[in-house]
Image 1 (cartoon, rainbow, N blue to C red):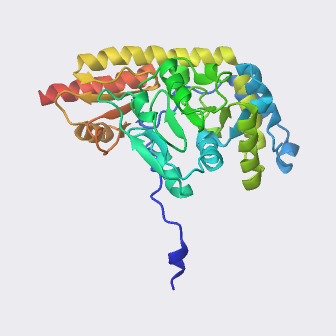
Image 2: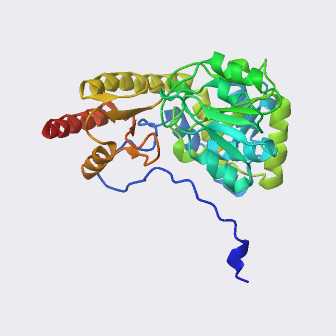
Length: 353
């Protein structure tokens, strides 16, 4: 018998392309176009060489306390991990152990079904409406748990808290996870519902609005019992998940709130300007409340535009998937980067007409 018969075989998540061109505009992975707070680099410089030989604090107390202070919750309500992907993976292992299927949208972050397959969790993809919205009635059925992003990815659509509360009220016996990777770019966080619903887990990240994708920091906030169960699973798997550097830099990042808000404000201002200019070029899209726009053109196929941009070293994201294979997800870059993209699109579209 071949040893391969005992291998767990899964179809892995495929991240956005990471091009290596010297001169390029990278708008395909939703990274922040601006550097993190200068205080983050100060924290790096102030680290002693001695700390590198020691294990980090397995409880990541300093970072959890900084987040607890920022969001005005107890430190026992905060869980941290190596990016929100690590946090969500731990949450899947911890809370999704029913024989009933977990539920998530059909157009959403494509890691959810990968984790479900990896951990042997039954799941159902629930179709979004024609305008890419969640219908809460579709989630009022027997299930083993629920997860969805808000704003959604890759559509950028924001659902209001009343819709989320409707789902929570109807599912008191399972954990409902709201993945808020993009919440800082528009809308109210579901954190406001934590005191009312003990089955709510809110997940956020430093990778987008806090400009620290390279440091891999994510976190979840929920009631103390939920977080306690999460920690039990984490410490049964890997106690030292976050390194000394990430902890120190993460604390510095959280404490510079003025810089954080300034950076988010710049991204939002650019996004709103670019929305108007894309509409003038014949694009339509859901009202983006994230750091990207999910756009389709009235006459030119998305796949063609994707390849045309790529030849100019402008990288956007194209998903060859049902219902969205004529859309491009365009991350918001600096004003200069977006002007270069818009100039190219104007020229290309004019040539096609």
